Image (cartoon, rainbow, N blue to C red; front, top):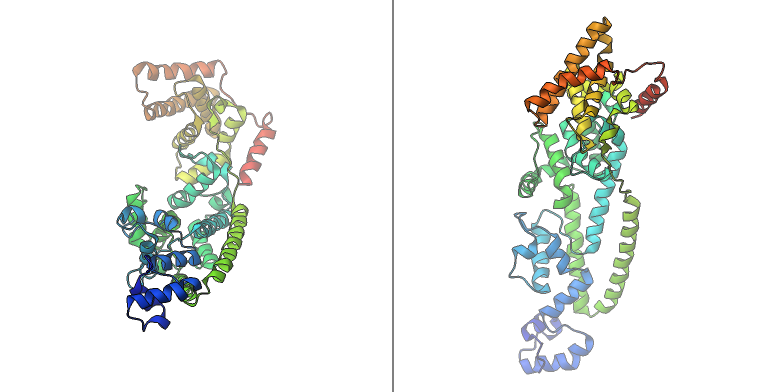
Length: 449
């Protein structure tokens, strides 16, 4: 008698022995015929072979897929399932399996993970190419979040949030008032067959995923734009299908793969199929790995500006440039020069490494920017000197309060320090003739963005 033979399974799985009823006869057939032919003796052996033939990795399946409520992965959700057989059934079961009943893609092996990663890397790269995301433009006019340490993460932060907050990727897009969100949507529809009406079916899943993972959610009035926002923030992690045809083909291909595996086990041809499938899987793995290297972008670190460089002549020229001032006005919808200078200085401070707020460097920077930005309002030297002093103190006061410096001594010293800087010619007063080269360089730099 065979200790691992399940007689009921054996006679139901192999039709040529379905007539056998006596357990002794069934065991005798298995020992003399079935075992030498490589027939499976029970469901465990069957599912082990199916897993091998379909490259179903239960560890990947259970740890890399979220359960239906998006709170846990499958392994943590279904702690009562411990065997490969149970997980194969969880995925392939005709009535309740995740393959047909889950509307999100389920990964079952490492190649699945690579394939999805490559797809989204390709999407990101194409988006950043068509929008011409320019880091120097972004760093000049926006604040880089403190948790962002490299260019790729900054690009993704912009794509998932910044663009929906109205942040532009370059100067040309700002001047031409490009519909960047529209460009991204068209690319996804035309190049990746994204069906927005199909994506709408995932709306609750996408919103719940963001809530469960404490991802801040922007309020976006336009429904189509909101769906695109949700998709870009959750599509990769949730492994969403892009359209119904893609989902249907995935189910059909995986079901056929499973059915073929069952038939190969029944027919005893599975040994040849294992070799063939392994070669195919390995070749796919190589192709996916090469594609991954091709899609990979160099991780370029973002180094915050050194605060001491804030008063460099080039930095002051850049911030005093009419083109830069106009950009800040457009981007932040401001027409008051005092507010514009305040925005420029605050942006510069947030992009600086350990800024020293109550320092002469900051006071020189602010006073120099005010002097050169307001120069068009100059009537007489005496009156203009008073205007620069007044505006500089006003802006510095606001910055101090923004950073929590509100002690009377510090605020009282502001006017004295600004007066000292102006009387002793410590501020940078730009002359077109003396700074023409740097000025032209700055303008050329901005126009190229």
